[in-house]
Image (cartoon, rainbow, N blue to C red; front, side):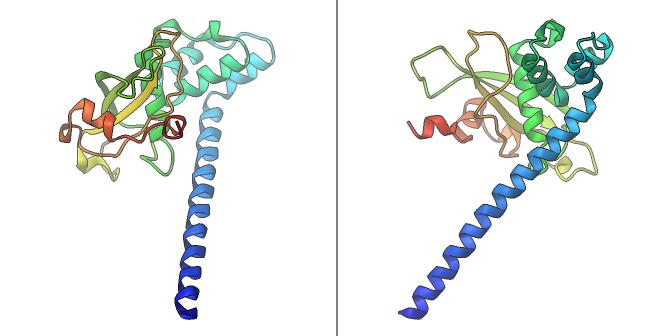
Length: 203
């Protein structure tokens, strides 16, 4: 019995150690990703902090790039300068794309922006919370060689849910991808196969 208890104790320690390691790796990856994006938009941030007007073309390019769009929006919001954010990219489609691409850029996920991404469908939130209508945006994306995901072709990714009755902004708590073929499931099935936001699973 003591041997069994010892083995179970060792297994428990190993499981806890693995969970802690995964949390640390995820946090470090998020920090590296944020640092990289902030470095890309640094001239804009520096100008805003100095109380001057950033270069309009730099702002447009950063908003046009889905890999920097989310952080640019959040930064301008923090500094109360959303007036600088181009209206052409302040749409739910653009914000959902930015949410998914930022998620994909995490080192634990795709590790880089996809080489191509397309919005395929919008799907009402199946949770039906009873409040404002919420929507998921279903995308397909792919990468080119030599990326590890290139042989998989078009993969599915889901961004959301977003309360689309309000002003467009990033921050979908259920944004996710299983890196499954887009054609392997319907858009509704891709949404259903994504983990529910933590706030909903606790409800």
